[in-house]
Image (cartoon, rainbow, N blue to C red; front, side, top):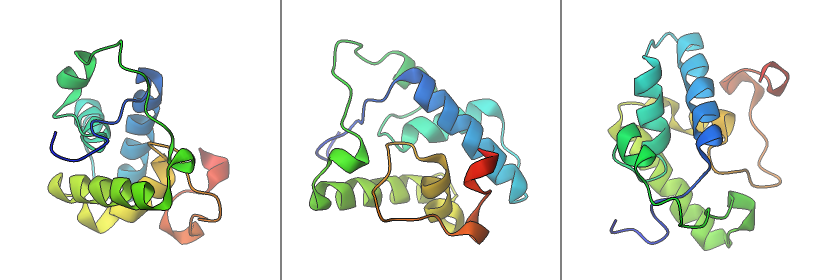
Length: 124
C-alpha cells in the first residue's frame, strides 16, 4: 500500500464485529447490504482490498495499534484514510457515523458519539 501504516492489522473477531455493526447501522439508515458486502467494507477501511485478501493476510504480522495509541497526526491520517475508503464504497454520507458507531480501530478519548447519528451505545 502507498499510505504509511496500511494495511491496519486487527483481529478477525473484531473485523466481524465491525461488519455486524455496520450492517445494523446501515439497515437502520435504510440501506441493505449483504453480510459479505459488510465484511468487504470492514476490511477496506483497514486497507485490504476485500474479505478474501484479509483472510489471506500474513498472520505473523503484529496487530496494529488502536486509535488511542496513535499520535494525533497518525490518528488524523488513519481517520482520513478510513473516511475516504467509506466514500469509495459509496457510503460517504454515513462515513463519520459509521466510524464512530462501529469503532473499527479503537476510539479517541474525548470524542463522544452524537446520539442522533446512530444507535445508542446501550444498543450495541
